[in-house]
Every structure is written in C-alpha cells, then in structure tokens.
Length: 395
Image 1: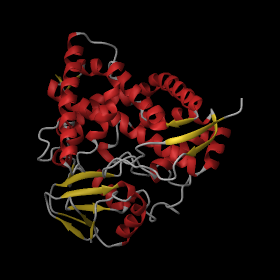
Image 2: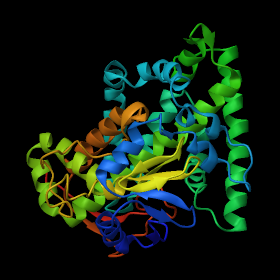
Image 3: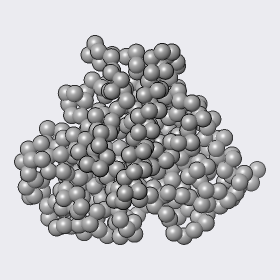
C-alpha cells in the first residue's frame, strides 16, 4: 500500500490512519519512500529498538541537499547507544524531578501573568498571547537568554519544523536563513558563557563533563539547536491543542474549574488524541521484517505516532476524547525507549500550570472561526493561530 504524506489534509487524517492500520504490513509513504508503521505495536517496536532502527535517520532528514550542514543532524537525538548514553545522562539532570521542582514557581508566575492579560483582552489570538509565549519565556530563562532576542524564536522554531516538508524556493531560503541566524546567535551565547558563566543551564552544562571530557563548542551548538525549538514546540502545540479540545468539549472546562486534579488527566488525553509530534524517523540498520513486511537495510522508517495513539487494539473507543481513560499514559507522544523525550516532564508542568491559570479565570471559551488553521508540515501538529473569545469567570 502506498499513501500520500500524512497530514496534508487534517480532516482526512483519522480515516487515512485507520485504513493504514487495517491493511496488512507497513505502508510506503510518498514522497519519502519510507516504510510507515501505523499500528501501535509496530510504531513502538521501531521507536524502542536502536539495534534495528537507528536514530541516525534524523541526520538524513535534517540535512536535505538544498540545506547543507545543520547542527541538529549532529545532536544526541540523531545518536544511538553507546554514543547517545553519556550525553543523555549529562543533560537529564536538568530535566529531572528536582529541576522541575525548582522551575515550578517560575512557570506558575509566568502562566498567571499571561492568562490574566489574555482574559483582560477578551478577544485574543492565543498562540501569540499565551500558548507560544509561555514555553518561549521558560526555555529562554532556563538557558539564560536575553529577553530582547525572544521575538525571533517563533520564526526560527517554525522554519526549523519545515525542514522535512519544505517544497518551494521561498521555504528553502527561509530555513537556510534560520540556520545561519541560529548558528551566529547560539555561538555567541556559548562564547559569552565561557567568558562569564551565569546561573543557567548553558553555564552548568559547559562546566560538566562527559566521561572526563567537556563538551566541545560543536557538540554544545548541536545541543542548543535541538533544545531551543524543541523546548518551545512541544508545549506550544500541547497547549494549543488543549485549547481546541476545551472549545469542543466545554464540559471539560467545567470539570477542570471544579477540580483542578482533572487537568493532568485532560492533558494526557490531549497528548493521545492530538499529539504535538505526529511521527518519528528511523533508519533500518539491517534487513528486518515487521508485520510481514521486509524492510531492506538503509530504508527510512516512520513510526506514525498520530495513528498508533488511536489504535483500537490498544485504546477502547480511540476516536472519542475521553480524559481519564484506561491506559491513559500509554500513548507514544513523547517517544519510547532511549529517546523518550527529555522535556516530557517540563511540557507536562507547563501545560498543567498554564491550564490552571487560564481555566481558573474563565467560564467559557469560544473559537472565533470554525475552521482551524493548522501548521504546515508533516511532523509538528497544532494550530498556527487561535483566535478565541475568553469569557471571564465571575468574581
């Protein structure tokens, strides 16, 4: 079976994925020519087994011929064990429970200020006012970046997300310009922290060692190229998709206002139902057979997270939005195995505190347009804009 790229028509995606899950074997996806795993069992197998399915596929997809060198291609996300292991261990400390506990007060403060300002406006475009600004400000503070530079981050993040789907000369040049600008900016940040360390993640990691060796500037640049957009995109889309689900399911807003402990259950179902990342690339290391399909060594393979999360073999009534469902956290939205998302707890924390701040201030939320303008591209999934009306809660 050969399919068009997933995600070109958002309304057709659930039906396409359901058809792919019902067909035997894997699907060949154009224009990649990749083998796509739509069923949960197959997608999980691809994500968890680096011996057969290498993460070096990211290096292939992150450096198309029209782009040239891209530091993301040399990041730890494109590495397999054992190279990946010490680098992962180095940065895990910043994203563990202790690190999240230190961040909680700051995330809450930023969330409440942004929510208050948005509700005061009433009619507001919520991506620029809230869902993007919250994770942008938090990752910027974690890295100790100058707030005056934050205005460039959305454009950079959007363009980096276009790499696998760019098709026009204008898109090519936009991505190339972003890579150049990010290289210059982040290289200056690294040099500034080497000269004068501060109290931020960049300074801490520059002083840390991996197996007795400190990170080189090239290694560190690759890490920041990965971390800066990733630290914004996942939470931005998680919050944006959460707002959409609140608009479509107003009873959920009532439940969350009455009991804020419902918010984490709601977030997990948003992650399953509308995952911010729809697919993961891998490279077949050897000839391998999956669900009866022979995949030759060197082939690109896709784990279709958006489809796996709605696999009826795993989730009951998968097309229904049911916070608190059985197997609520078994979705693949943060990956699986050695590349499970480092920022998963940060994304959950930001989403939880962001939604707490917002829902406590409103009694209703309405979309100002029935048509959702989704982000272009195959991988990142969320609204490009969120024009809404926020109805303030009574005092």
